[in-house]
Each structure stands twice: as structure tokens, then as C-alpha cells.
Image (cartoon, rainbow, N blue to C red; front, side):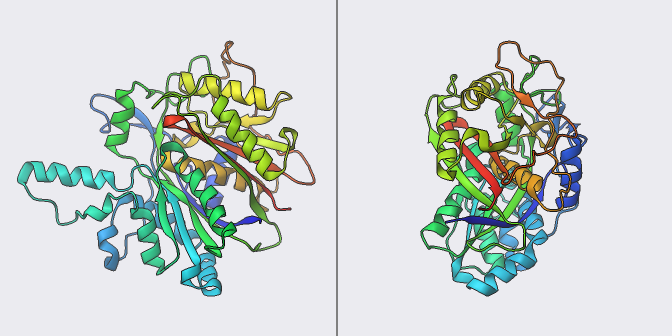
Length: 398
């Protein structure tokens, strides 16, 4: 059964809507990555922060008030018309909410605990519901008054990619007629200090696949797709295939040969009924850590021996953790969108100094475009702690 991606709302360091994100994404504009202090003691680090004013949480949902949910609301408001139409068409009990996150409202929780340690009182604005991993799905379901399945997946950096896979399963199983799916993660001190303790943070803008790469940048984002069984409009974009594996090699390091990554990519191709040569572009996980990029290079070289245009978009947004899988799937969606008349692809933003120890990949450059094909299919990779691997294929609906 085809899972159509009929609408998407997104917000990240690249911008606050389709037009702004598309313009800066395809231009390789990394100006949204800005160096800031205050996140990690005695360090100035590039972060992909959203600088716009976010919509307030409605007063009757004050218990759900968190920056994470404000980012999600900003994405949802962009496609509220399409969402309301789906609810009216199918009924609130037939619309599901499946999201991915890794932080939820942990920043508000940290502030609340800090206040309690000082005064033995929580702030009036603190509510335990803010920090629950289920908070984004609960908030969205309450805001829209939905009674279909609503839950959150938290598998670190594959969370929202898994949410898309699970949303398609919910449609296939007949549990829903439409699913709001995607992911959200906000910047917080806990996350940045954790990655800093792992010595995985770069003090410069991240430099994926370069011989000079030295770690990740962190960002924040929210992405919300409306996935249905029915196409909407004249140009139909769909989730064509999805593959998942868990090699469980190490709690934080990837399996060095790329075995698990290859399994996920092969499953996605098989699921979509495609061959490697059918893929027009690959959005790499590309975190710019030494181990991830080495592993992914080996895996991509093995899966695509004839090459495939590819790039990492992490230097443009930072690594948005639980939102990354859905955000980079949305970048593939934007490449296919009718308004992208030039059929532009995200360029590889780096210093151009290839690592001689890694297989050479086919990097996209500024101005790169999708090849003219009867059917365009784009793949997006996401890899997470614990050897959790997901590959998604977004493309023109059959």
C-alpha cells in the first residue's frame, strides 16, 4: 500500500517555512549555524538554533508548555489546513500521531530541578508532563482533539525516521486512515554537555567526510508530515521504502565495517522494489565524527559501487538528534516538490579535503540537480547509538 506524504511543516536553523528552508538548503547557506556560549561551560560552540519567535502554547494546554512543543506547534501550524481537512474527512479517531524525540521537555525539567535544589520548590511553570518522552504526541493529540493512536518513539538519532516507518505500518494495518508523523528535538544543555563529555563536539562548523573532521554540531528542529493512503494534488510524493536494522555493536560507536547500515539500505531498496541504480540522491547521516563517516563511506561504497550523488546536510542545520531522520527526509521531499522547478539537490558543504583513507563518494556541488528520470527516488540514512540503523526512500508515487 502506498503511503503518500501529502504535506510537510518544518522549522530548523535553515528557516521557518518551506520557502526559506528550500532557498537556503539548495544554496548551501550555512549561516544559521552560529557560535554561542552558555551551553557548555568554558566552550563556544556552533549550534543550529531556531531564532524566530515561536507560537505560544494555548492556555488550556499550559501543562504541555515547553520549547520542544512550541517547535512542534510551529511546524503543525504550517499545514494546519491540510490536517483539519484530514480530520474532517476521516474522523478524529482515525487520525494517528507518531513522532520521534530524544529530549522532549528535558530543558524545562532541568530548570525545574535546579530551582528545587535552590529553594525546595518547583517553579509555577513546571509540570512533569513537559519532560515525558510521550509529551509531543500527547500535546498534538490534545491540541487537535484526536483519539487515534498517539505515541512517541525514542531511539536517539533514528527516532523520527522510525516514526515514519511506524506511521506507514499503522496505515498498512488499518489502524489509521491518516497519520501525523515526524519528529522534534530542542537544544538543551544536557545534550550538549553529554556530547562534549564524549569528546564528540567540534568547536568549528562540522566538516563531514573531510580528513579534517573532528566532531558534530547540535541543532534543533521540528518536522511534521501528513501521511495518508490517498494522494492529494497532482504531484504525489510517497514513502516508497523503509529498512531497519540493529547491529548492537556498541552503545555509542558504529559497527566499523558498515554491516548494519548496509542491511538497512538493502531492506529499504527491497521494500520499495528498487535497485541501487534507481536512487537519484542519498542524504547521508554524515555527522562528521571520525567513526561514523568512515563506517558510512564503506557502507555507501559497498551498496552503490557505481556511485550515487550524495551529501550530508548536518553543516546546514546541526545534528538535530531525534528530529534528524524526519528533517532529512523532508529535504528529500523538498527536492521533489513541484515548486522546486530546478529540481535542486542539497550540496555538500565542507572544506573539500577528502580523507584518503575513505572510499571516494560522489559529492553534490552547489547547483546540483536531480537527473531527469521517469521516476525519481531519493534515500535518506539515519544511524543511532546502539547500532540502530534506518534508511528511508522518498520518491514520486507509482
